[in-house]
Amino acid sequence: MKSPRKSLLLAALLLLLADQNGVAQNPAPGGAPPATSPGTVPPTPTGNGEQKPLTPAAQLPTAQGKINITTTTVVVPVTVKDKTGNMVAGLRRDDFRVFEDRIEQKITTLNADAFPLSLVVLIDNDLKQKDAEQVDASLPAILAGMSLSDEADVCRFDQFFYPGKGFTKDQDNLLKQLKRTKLDSQPSVAPPGGPFNGPSINNAPAPGAGNQDPSLIAIKGQTTKALDDAVYEAAELLKDKPRERRKIILLISDGKNGAKFNNHKYDDVRNELLRYNIIVYSVATGSSYFDRKFTRLLEYSGETGGDVSYGAKADSFEHFYSQITDQARNQYTLYYSPKGDPGLGYHTIEVRVEREGLNVTARKGYYAVIPQ
Image (cartoon, rainbow, N blue to C red; front, side):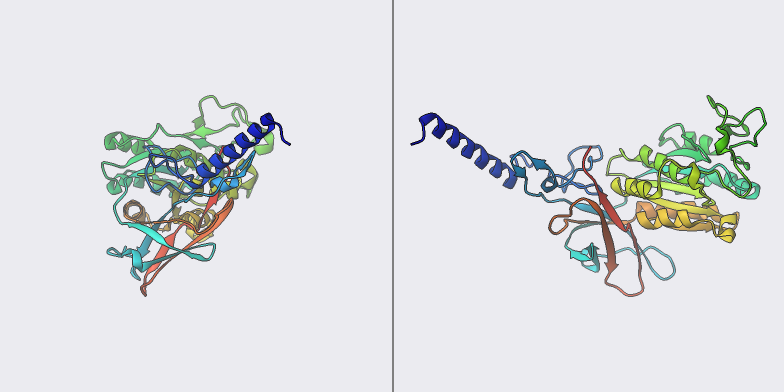
C-alpha cells in the first residue's frame, strides 16, 4: 500500500502535467500572439517594432517534452508585371497561388495597399571613373521617387563599409547628403610603400584609419571590394524597422566582389535578408553590363524578390530610381499559414498568378532559426 505522502506527490505531479498540456493546446486569455518563425509575423500586430524571429514552439524542448506547434503567418511581397514591364493592378486573392517547399498553401489575406519605405542607398565607392561620374550626377534623382512618408540612409562601400548619418524623412537634408556624395574612382587600398595604406574617403584617409595589413594589399587583376559585407551591414541598419514599412536596399554597383575581403559569406547574408524581410534592388553600372560582373547583384535581388536594372546609359539611372521605389511601395502582399510543422532551416516559396501573360516576382524563400 502506498503511503499518503507518496500518493499526494503522485497526484500533484499528474495535476501539473495536465495543466501543462492545457497550456500547450489552448492560447492564453487576451489573445496572446502565436510564436513566429524568421521571415514570418503573427496575424495580429503586437507593437510598432519588428517581431523577433522565433522558432515554432514544437522545436523547443522542455523538461517534460515538446510543446505543440502554434500557427505562424508568412508574409510575401509580390510584384506582378505585364509583358511590357508595367505593374498590374486590380488582382484578387483568388488570382494567386503560393507554394512552400512545393506544397500549395492557403492564402489567408491579400493586401494591395501601398507601404512606406525604409531605404538604404548603398553605393559602390570603387567604380571606374566614367561610371562614378554618372552615378554622382544621378544621385539627387533618388528623391523623385520618394514620398514624404519614406525615409532613407545613404551609405557607401569598397573594401570597407561607410555608414551614413542615419535615416531621415527630411528631403532637404537627404538632398544635401546625396549632393555631397562623391565617389572615389580608385580602390581604397593604396600600393605598398606609400605613407598611407588604409581606407580613404574622397581620396583622403578615413577618420581613425590605421596602416593596412600588407596581406590585404590589392594586386593586379584582383578586386578588394567587400560587397557581401556591405549588404550585411545595410541589412543590420534595416532589420529593426517595423514591419509596417517596406525594408529596401538600393544597391548601386558594378557587382565586383573580392571573396578574400569579406567576413560574411553569401549564404549568411542572404539568410539575414530573408529573416528580416529585406528586399534588394540593384542598379548595375554601365561597365558592369559589358563586363558581365553582376552575378552578386542578380543573386541578392533574385533571392529577396527585388529586381536588377542595367545603367548602360547616363540618363537611365534617374528612371530606374523612380521605377524601383514605385515598385517596392506598391507590391501586393500575401499572407499564409504553413501547413504542418515548417521546422528550422530554409523553406522555398513559389508564387504563381492564374492569368496568362503576367510575370511574377517574389522572394524565393524564408529562413527559420532558433531564437537568440
